[in-house]
Amino acid sequence: MHPPNSAKSQDELPIDVHGVDLDPQTRCAHYHLPLDVIAIKMKCCGIFYACKDCHDALAGHPIQLWPRAEWDDRAILCGVCSYVLSIREYMHCGNRCPECSAGFNPACRNHYHFYFETIEAKRE
Image (cartoon, rainbow, N blue to C red; front, side, top):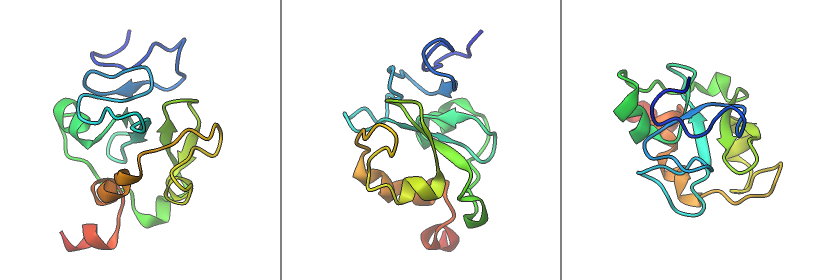
C-alpha cells in the first residue's frame, strides 16, 4: 500500500515519490510548472519527495543537506522517464534529462542550498 500523497503506483514508476497533490510527472502543489518534473531523494530519510515543502509537510523531521562528498549518489529522479541522476550529474546536465532530454526548471538551482551542501548553505 502506498502512503498518502504518493505520486504513482509501482506499476507506473519504480520509485515511490512522496508529495502534496502530485501529478504523474512529480509536479506538486508547490511547484507545478511544465518543467517542474524532478523529485529529490532526501539525505535525511532516503525517500524521494517532489520538493522541500512537500518534505516539510509530510516527513516530520528536518531536511539534511547532501554533503559534497556524496554528490555522486543517485538522488534526482526525472519525473518524465524515471531515470535517476547523481547530484553532480543533475547540477551539470544543462537542465535536461540525460536519458530522455526532458527539460528541467532552470530556476531550481536557486534552491540547491536547501538540499545540497553549498557555500551559501554553509553560511546559513
